[in-house]
Length: 184
Image (cartoon, rainbow, N blue to C red; front, side):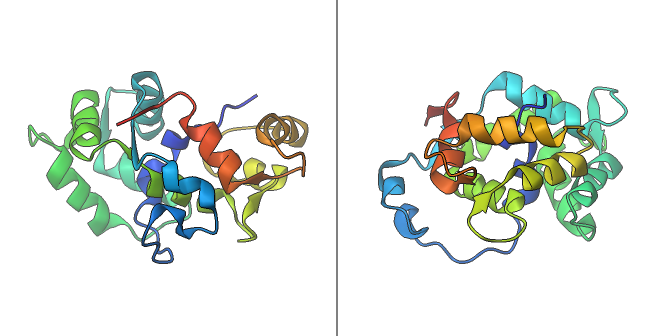
C-alpha cells in the first residue's frame, strides 16, 4: 500500500493559484489559529521526495527531471518557474540539484509551511468539495506513478478519517501530514 506524504507534493503546490488566505484561521476552520505556521522537514521523507524527482536515480535532479515531475502533476507550463528554482537551489552551478542543495533550500525556505499543506490538500481535492475520497487519492497517486488499488486507497482514507464520514477533510489532512514533524 502506498504511503501518502505531504512532501511528495510540496514543490508543485505552493505556486498554484489559490484563494488569498490572510491568516491561519481563514479556511473556515477555527482549529488552525493555534497551528504552527511552519514545520521542520523530516530528513527521511525529504530523501523520498528527492528520489521522486530524481527519475534516473543518479543522485541529482536535472532541469528536465524537475519539469517532468510538475508535468506529471498536471502543470505542463513550468519551465520558467523551474529555471528560477534552479537559480536559487543549484549552489555549485553544475546544472543539477543534489540532495544537500535540495535540503539547503528547505532550511532557507523556513521548512514546510502551513499554506503548503493546504495547497497539497487542494491538489488531492480534484472536485473542490473540501474533502478527499478514495477515488481522488487513487487518481493523485496514479499521476505520481504509484499503483494503488481502490481497496487500498479506501483503507488509507479510513486510516485518516477521524470523524467517520468516509472522506479526509482539511483538519484530518493537516493532522496526517504534520504528525511526524516538529513545529519550527
